[in-house]
Length: 273
Image 1: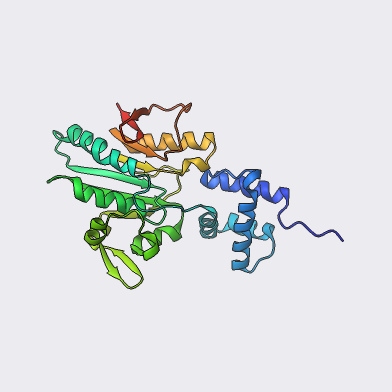
Image 2 (image 1 turned 180 degrees about the vertical axis):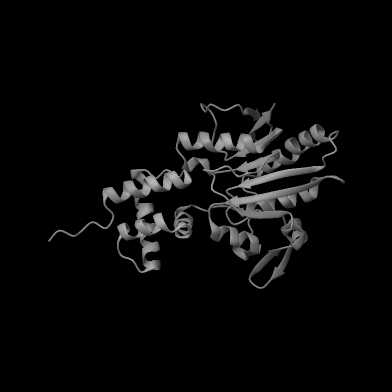
């Protein structure tokens, strides 16, 4: 007796096409097993046994589609991940921006953490900015992600004892409150970060951002989707601004006006028009 295949080649192509169209995430045959595993979890949760039935559901129900996209994304992060990039932010980017903006009358730095996961990145940025910005400079951070679950976790601002790696002791005592089971970000830092759902396949509506962090996200996109995302970042950024991507990611070979910048600590990209 031949056992029926749970996830056929036809199913895989239908799902990968939908996922790509909705999120830009590109599932290849080599990571098909990951998609199949996440799909089985969703089917169990919905009490379904057929990928075809669930596919029909997510094409009709936009909220369930969001939940499905949430389930297939990878959310690996930690506080002050890739410290050389934070050194670059502190020692190169912020001084450059303060010089550029000093005679404009605008004393607010606008920052976007795109693909913020559970909030470690935007809160790391907020703590550093609170330390280094001189009076009367201020900052605002928008933190976005396609995962509603991650956004809710970030908004809560609670991190268990096993998720505090990377935070300097001085920052931990200054910017967190100790509560049972872990630490909670202090209200004044939480108030600096606005969490918001956003799919990078679409225009965010943000404009004049001075700094954009989008690290270890575009690696999951193919070349066409990457180009679209980078163009939308360009449109969202101020005329003189900076873009951080993951240390293993690159815009090399991409048709983009961003300028590559190498500092003593890390590399990044600059918009300068």
